[in-house]
Image (tube, rainbow, N blue to C red; front, side, top):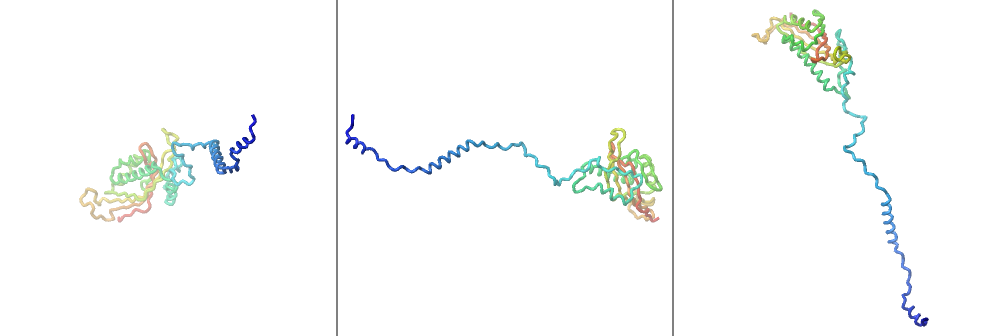
Length: 273
């Protein structure tokens, strides 16, 4: 069926007229693609691995400028003990005992400090034994095979028993004695190879020098326990000697013992007689 033209014109007037094309939403076009791009990038980039976990903090690298003191040298690095077969000259003692002085980067070990203290205590025991007339206590001072050079008039003595037998007659002629120790130096050293058990091992050794003043009171001087102790006595009844004990020590099963002693006088005897 063909519609009349008038009806077609009327229907066309009812249709909406076309308007201008709307402008594009620039804002939405920019934001939406950017957000999508960020989300896409986040989905593509893999996360970095977590840092390693330690049960304890890792140790710091070693320092090349450490100020901690290093331990004292081991026994194998100690100097060899001088034999003391002849007395040491006074001029050589400073260089010998400077070897035992700690430096800014070293320190004496507890074992070395204990040895030095034991040697000094044994020197004190000698003075107490002599003045107390307990000559059997010299067993704890001298080694069984010890030797001594007392100079004239005694000379050389070999063996601990011989030393213990030689001293009493020379000292008991006096009413009493007083042995005072002054300057004492001890240096640890190698004492030579052991024999028997432990053969081939180095012995622990030491050398000491102790200044002494030995005062000998004559028969007229009062003795401890006698009436009038502390009374006046003339110098004719007193003899004073100044000198050094130069000792070489070794450490054995019984501890530190003197294996050789030199008695070196540092001046003449002084007496008013």
